[in-house]
Image 1 (cartoon, rainbow, N blue to C red):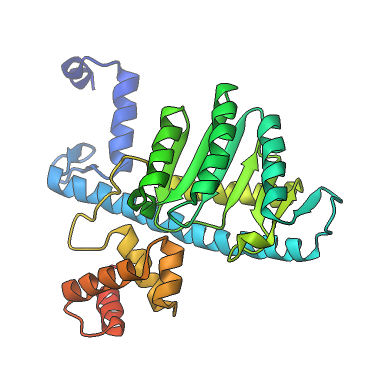
Image 2: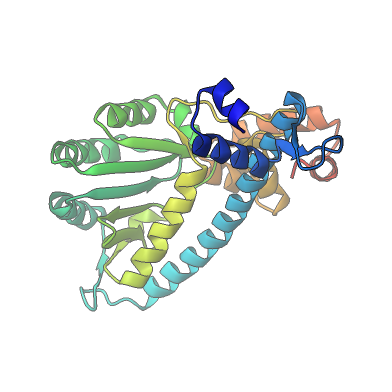
Length: 303
């Protein structure tokens, strides 16, 4: 140990901590030639072990996220169905876009520390972007931390992508995912605004301060945030001939019985894009049908 500390120019405590980390990563193994000593694994094997560990962790998080999405969506839908139309017990139904915008303006003025946003659907309407700009600028000027999730397909819509870039230049943080939970806004982790019907946001929104509902939505946001990638960064590509996260999600949605139109809506892309991507996947998999493509992808461990 003393020789190793001298060679590295590091104190013994730091060296022992580094060795423990390498052992945890399985980059150091017990030596068979010198009992009690350790041997390093080859760089090629070590890199493969690290990548495999990261892939396993990502899969675990994605499974947890899928379960949380389902649980949160069920809780919110049941609560929205029973919530009164007027403010009562910490909940308020907002009917109409004007009522929603008025409430958001009030909440944006009151927020003091943090605003969490999930904006599914890829391209956002110009009206929505214009309405959000002044609210985001004012909140940022007051030191409010802005964390926003968009779908990966936002990169295909110039106005929305430019807005997201403007938000990062303002000091906010933006990440993207292939798919997202329903639209939500959470202010200071105390009040949340979610659509009554995610499939038709024009029906209105539910504004709730119920701690259980808000905590569930915050947990869902945080899990989605963990698997997102920062705006401007490239989503990690598979090290082998596997699938990107977007391709994997497309196959999963279609295998689950969704139509091209429904899958495109979930991914925030056009039906034409869905069909083009699926045709490319079938060609890569040498499949003559979508069913065969899903089967081949599963057999190769891509799903």
